[in-house]
Length: 501
Image (cartoon, rainbow, N blue to C red; front, side, top):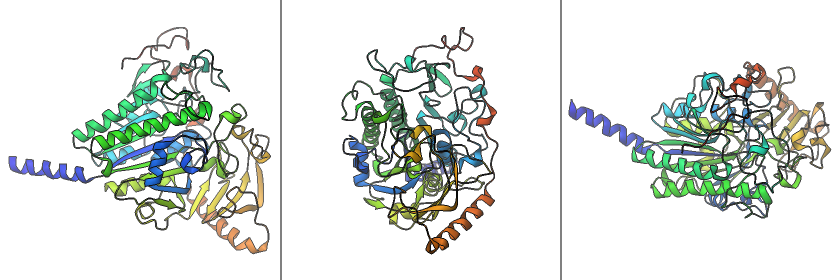
């Protein structure tokens, strides 16, 4: 019996040793044109550029929403945010709702296959009563980070800002200062942003090292706060870029990526690790940020809109010896990451309707994508209006267009918040291969067949879509705002504590 037990244990260890590790890098509010490897002339992103040069760069990669929370829900579940109820808009510190616990995340899929799982960075899928919606309740064994956007607190109390630096824009002064969590406990409030990335890289390196020592395959999810407003950077990066605070923040994100890569090399698992990078939604120089903001490159408009600038994102896949360096124009999406990781890990898919497809043929063969369509929902999706736009192969049809305050200062008036929802019948139609900036509507009867094909796909998709109960419509409760001294008064000013790290 003892011999049999050792044999089983040895076999299990061999299986685990052969499973690939996964590192998912997720930037915040990063535009299609913000990285050096995607064409920006003054961005300094040497580590991401190296991944792009030695990996696979995606030109036609999409997220499912032009704002944070819904995009993250879709990434982790492989399902449009309308199914999980993460709409309209985003979750707040006191939100009653969050990502429903009956949704299955990438972490839960991989954990069931024996993976160690960790998240370091921004969650933004809810806190809730008794920490109900934190990542530790969604398959992540380890968590260090901030549970929502770091502008969802008083700007003036963010420790990243020295007294002589103006805080451009608007934050939320009426709520608690931004907390830093370790698993379900607040370590520090307000978070010390000058030292935050250093803590993140140490946490990530320790997780990787310990997983390797335990002979456990691992999944590390690093959803960075960079380059979301307000930008910050620690002493090693502040003032070093040519793009000001935005460039410094981008450099610091890239620096943390570099430290993760170094740990993978030092632990000897770099050749058994798939690294995937993308971002949650597009970015443009908003009214309050202007040149201090990001850049959508050739893409129209940006954050908050269903134009290309809001939902087409840079993406890179890197796995030495398995993914050949190159560029793919295959239509792909953040929805596809869960089924792809699951296939590579030999894990079972969730028993629910998935919107993602396996993209291993794209990764390893530079082949065609199983995805032919992408459906675009606005910030505030509604069954009455359905999807606002559909991409099919190289064509994109807009049934509704609408600007957003996030894209307010873009010279194109179509992006402004004053560009109210407009219905288009027939839908606007663009050839994105010839016109990625969506400037020239393909008008005329010769395009009727394309519009008809897209209309049929739209109807088929909408007939299969079941909207989940809106988690954001459940509202907020100030008592749910995370406070390290929950019984103190007066709130929110008394919610302060030091780090125990």
